[in-house]
Length: 440
Image (cartoon, rainbow, N blue to C red; front, top):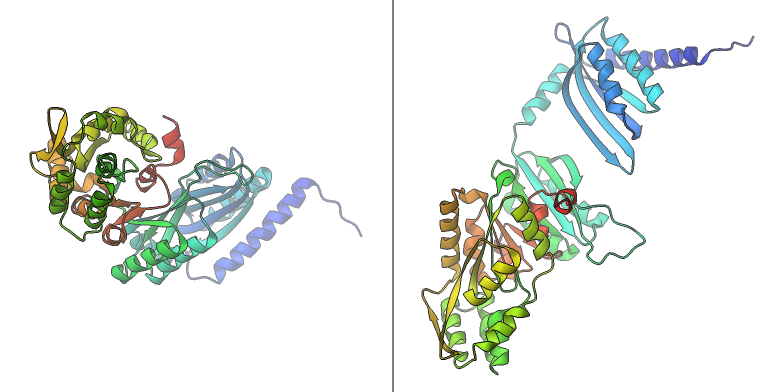
């Protein structure tokens, strides 16, 4: 005997079969309801298109369902949607599931129902109050080995990954990009087992796999940074100006040797500064203008400064270099404050001396604190970016200290570092997506 069924009947049999499986699953689980409550996780997958969320939530609205949680991801037009909802137990739950299956069939998507016990739900709610952290992973390209290394460390510390989002735009696998960059942001929760070991592991991964890893507490200050302070030489510009001046004055090798020792923390900055200044005695003032007009501004600096200005940040140069060049960059990049060393010039030539106090590492930290107080900004809302040992005081004082293409000693002692991208990598540590940067 042969039976012919209409499309509607086939859908009906399909749905009733799915409901039978779901009901059987419910029977085998722990008790699902306290009094008249029932909690169900609706998992949705399929081709993403407009109207999916609207269609499913409209069905839930018909039955006065309460949305306890909802999350959605879209990877290459493939939808992954989860809706955790509460419904009246008994006669209400069956019809709502049946209607959801009808709607899923209409939308050509797949749905799965997972019963959640009240006890499990309450445990999950309480776990959400644990400490939250943000881990940012940056590189020209992100390989599976890099992400595997980072997530293994997260797992070893008994932290749970709640979400992963990409902050950079999608990249072509055919066209060659002039400035390749990739960044993902992980939101994790839990209590860290061993923070020192975790930090050391991140640094090892960063060194061996050529990737930048930033670890921050996800608190109110991270979401409201207001002041960014930069070192100048080898940070905002790809040069040590004093070395450039020395080269033009014929004492380049002597000054470079002193500079290198100071940047590595081998000699006191103030001592090195005085020695280098003395070697510049007699240099013509005209040379300063030539050097200023040819300063090699770091890749990504213009993009970074444009975004910071657009979103209302205050910016400052805090440099052991010279105000002459700091003020030139201030005009070029639209920076608010400049604190650096002032050259003494007489009869059109450098005297080999300076005016005022030397801006060393401690002075940089003092200026950062003073600017923050003047602007009414909490110190935890500040960011400092630098590459040398004399930047460490301000990097450690700021709410977020970033070692930028820094010396090994500086990277070891800074909270975050960027070595694979340009200065605009700072924006990813602030949580900005490319769409918010490039919309300006």
